[in-house]
Length: 225
Image (cartoon, rainbow, N blue to C red; front, side, top):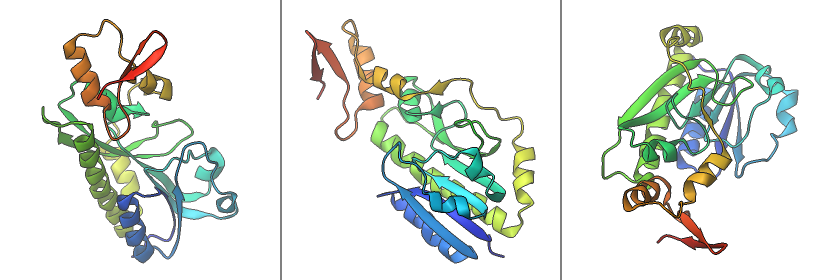
């Protein structure tokens, strides 16, 4: 049995989004794929003229509005790169800063609030002491794609499995705390009085590629190597 009419919202340059696209291309009766490349871009108006059985979001920057969610027959589902304790932006950063021992991904229904819809599934992995931000991100994405295939295969078998997942996980609740862009930006800014232990925590939680924590001294930014 195929999934019917499907829209996948993925991310440009994400190999896992492409794996999901290739799977859904074969397992959907009709399929549309839209990539997002940066935050703030509005969702293509073309989809407002179409109805879908499912909309899936995987690392997408797009935020669905009620008019988009109402276009689905069964559900709009997001694969969130974080556990229910961490909502919003920079979740893995704060999990590392808080020295969490476990982290993971959450599949949930999309509603009009960010990371707030009914939870379908939570997968977790262990964070080791030597794990840095890059390692944890890769672990998260690998777990997310496994979770996505797990959910999609259940829905492909029977759309009623959606309700079964909701009932099975109805005791799982999202945190009230919603991390925002300003929270993440604040994490990157080291306080002048930060000791060595605090500096290590922040570096582990924030340093990746061109992103590094920094201090402001005499109104100038000084980035840590």
